[in-house]
Image 1 (spheres, one colour):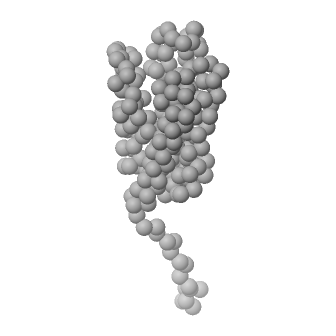
Image 2 (cartoon, helix red, strand yellow):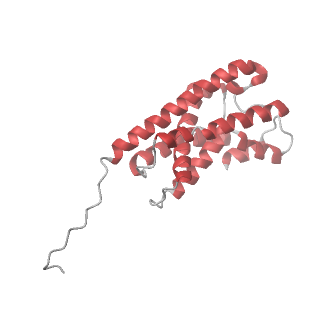
Image 3 (cartoon, helix red, strand yellow):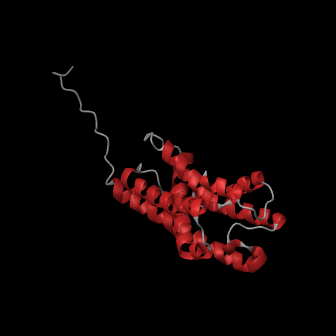
Length: 200
């Protein structure tokens, strides 16, 4: 909410406050925060095990991790923010990623990931890239420097996207392996004991 508020108050590429508020949803950062927030709330019910939930749970975890890593490694030096802008920025790029990963490590839920879920988790970033490039071609605006076709050209942007996709896939695979270790060995259900004449 703070990010939406500061976007509304800050003049930029989009003229009205309403347009700027809607535009915040185009950022991978905001989308990953929304997904990890929604799936964390849904995970309170530990019996959720549908494929859709499992995929989105991993999407949220991996996307929010990439959000924090890419911002602090590549983007943080590009901005000089103060006040509410800095508070909102640190919440979505630092506080939420750290808390999301910590909660997953401590509370799980476990046994929701697999190789198939890891591959399916790439659908979200691929869809985001496609949306961003199509929208950017029409609006001549891109949310991040590494995907700015106007400045870098499609070749460089494609290479950047490949590197980010490899990072996403590596994190998804790592989370899958770590989840198995944290869950421990699977416990087989007890077999029913055959009754004896005395039990009948």
